[in-house]
Length: 395
Length: 138
Image (cartoon, rainbow over all chains, first blue to last red; front, side):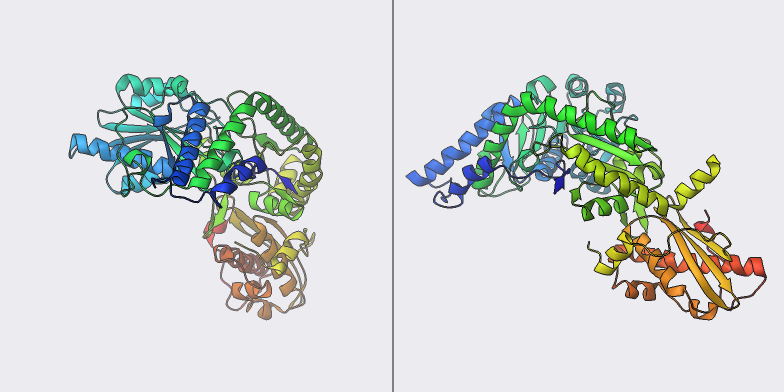
């Protein structure tokens, strides 16, 4: 099987599973209990917190464990608005985000918008970048939070985060970045980025699903959204997902240590794969940044005259896993909002496929993919009336 | 979302792909906006569809429904073809996921559009046949 969908999820690393298993067996105790065996579990949580803090250059007391990226995003946005309203009374808050955000942020904003919150969706350029000038111009007196992802899940754009966060800092507005695709793959330093909150998720870098964290800079006005017990220093209630947290700690330690080796290796694989597809298969285009400021594992290609799902199905039947941003549903194919924000037309967006490389991929995967991909594209084009029409206009 | 084995078979091994050079009627429905375009070619002699073929841009279900509908119309009379509904196409494929039902509607419409093209060209009136919907113009 050829797995090229590491941006969707990554396989759980064996070392990580080994680290987790004792906390699902003999070390089952509730970390909030006072007796000795429970204190041992508590200390495992502390270790994991140190690992996460070290990985992103934060302080341990700035790391809060959550169920993953979506919860972290929800908490950061809703908790900030709650704190804003507690301070500003009836003034309706304003959120700034980008048109190319992950649904974990975008749909939170849409939901809040329906409840009367003002939202600005910043445009992105043809490669997915948000400009600091556009951000600056969008800030209003009632802007409570700016949420812009560090790295885009579909097209791999890595934002000029430090410059964006600089804009908000000078205006006293909080900045959240969804770094789910970045952490464990590229160096992430919260001090250097200058963000107030950062969301991350373990299963994107060899950890288990259902566990993530929110970095909250010391002094940030953020209220809890989950009320209950006193876990996570009174800010995120609920008995801790101990095995998950241990897994997150182990995975982030490994992934971060390996960045100096894996980042150049996977970047080179990405560039070879991109060049190979563009050179071998005509009428293809790369979506997203051309080279720099792009996630090391992200390749997003539009295949003209064919539709993404049918290509994915073909790849699937041949044992290759990739993904598409589009989803043909309820009578209309809804192209990826990210690709549309980048300015692609429907045809280009509908024919886009994302290949995302990870630690499991090697150079041998490229010819293996091409052996499947080239004939599949060819076959679907012979089926396509659009390709016929194109050939006829060329004649 | 899962496709039936029949859908996957018709998707991976589509029947009747291609154009009919001297087609009696050609119908194109759908557009790039909605993500599916179906073009059906019919060869009609007397009252009988003696050949049918298609070209389709779209998802797996779009390809499979085109393939199936061309199989279903071959050898049938025009009045028999007029009774082929999208439900019949879905049934012949052992069902489609609910979100893909519209593909079978397109397949039915593509056949009817080809019949309409034939009736316009030949001046033959086909009982119950409606002109193709304008928003499906390609």
